[in-house]
Image (cartoon, rainbow, N blue to C red; front, side, top):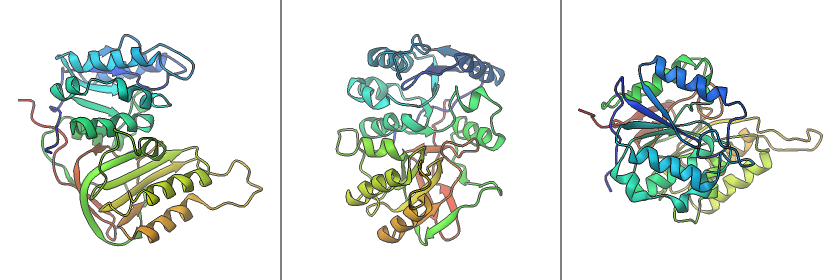
Length: 316
């Protein structure tokens, strides 16, 4: 199936804000993110339920779905940016109107818990979405310049950007040599594992799988990587990219443990696929924008990634 590309953003366009997962602890971060977007020349509409709180959720499942549907239904909205991750997005997947979304493709940006939504939209609609900065996180602070440039370059252009320049203060590591190409599928490791064997799991065969996580102890990372290996997700891929596993260390440092690096090295050896690690994406300020569903080429030996097509179509 041909991928469904959202129209590129133009200055003056309307951007919608949603909270599909957890609420922000400080609602002023939403205001800061809105000011950031308005300062760039965009108009902003905030979802009706964005500031709701229901335990660890940003409102009920129905309220969060209502905001998503409203943004996709609104023909003036050209992009949708999530406030934050946390937890709750997988709860929405059975409630979404995928026909509505497919009829109204637009940029959807987020990461972490938003991974579940992005993979479901690829499976059900073939919509290219953006593993990218979020309103209540990066956009509410002083956003890293490289992060900012890469996101807006992809979101506002209908041209492919080709080879990705990785900043010199990042040091990608090849864990297994080789070349591979395919469509980028993945995101937060916990969320990828959470949708396995569900109707929302895409076909990972010949894809370029990318993974990251945060605050998971090494044994949990090991367990999830083993699940991907046992499910033949990694061995069926054409290449594997891993970003940052932030604060993924043992809680009890007195007990023996493997490191995440050792776990990834073992997975690379076991799968035999081109494997490039320590890339700048994940729960860190400096992050690559990775369009979910985009066709890419990886050369693990040379530590290069090339985007083979544009993430957006022309809006003209």
